[in-house]
Length: 237
Ligand SMILES: Cc1cc2nc3c(=O)[nH]c(=O)nc-3n(C[C@H](O)[C@H](O)[C@H](O)COP(=O)(O)OP(=O)(O)OC[C@H]3O[C@@H](n4cnc5c(N)ncnc54)[C@H](O)[C@@H]3O)c2cc1C
Image 1 (cartoon, rainbow, N blue to C red):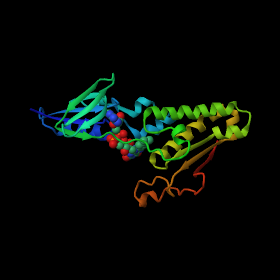
Image 2 (image 1 turned 45 degrees about the horizontal axis):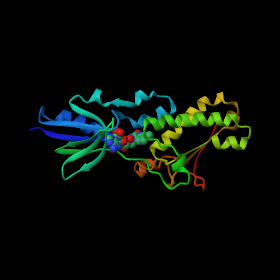
Image 3 (image 1 turned 180 degrees about the horizontal axis):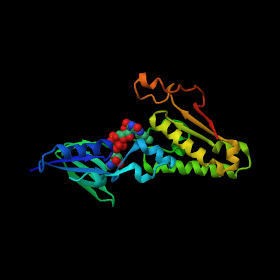
Image 4 (image 1 turned 180 degrees about the vertical axis):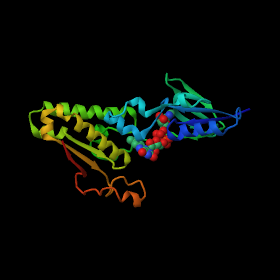
């Protein structure tokens, strides 16, 4: 009987694993099933563009069924694994609990955003990892402008016009740059906010931004300014 390969996760790892298996496996030699909670691959390098509205959300996703022709795609959430019994526990979108037997398993469920113990972060912070979060980020920026515009007190306005990103890796740096551009584009419609200007801060424990590439490349990035309140990316508006 043909082997059953189950891939958990339809992101970069899972999608490309399925695509490669489709290319290299001889026909009928194995059945490949991909289980993912989304029916698309989110192309994260373009996510900052979706947050800033320069890209349509549909242009930053790749529908799995459109690209994977010999893989069974199952929309559901992986809830558990019985490694001894070689079965994956899956909850379907309508809430049915199912067990999926496999011969080979590829685990590619990605990661979750870290929430460092910064007071207020868990309650008020927004993540920047999913399409919904990217859109929520843009909506939050717009809402802040609306609220600031409605306030008489300039001091009260200032807190709504200050934007802080935590984490100066690629996602943080690209995210703050795109969102800053977006706010700069729309701020003319908010006369009080335009006069006050906005404040953009990026905070990181490291002394340089974009620290994931090798030091040789990363050292070309601007050095952060130490500050008890974080590293300032400047004022704009
Ligand atoms: C804003 C942003 C920009 C980035 N830019 C770059 C870049 O320019 N270059 C670069 O190399 N990397 C970039 N990255 C990092 C890159 O996105 C990750 O390294 C990559 O997505 C990791 O791939 P993965 O397959 O492990 O996880 P993911 O791509 O996150 O895929 C995980 C998949 O598993 C699914 N899933 C999760 N939990 C479950 C569950 N319980 N059940 C079923 N399915 C589940 C998810 O829906 C998702 O489809 C960026 C990340 C972000 C957030």
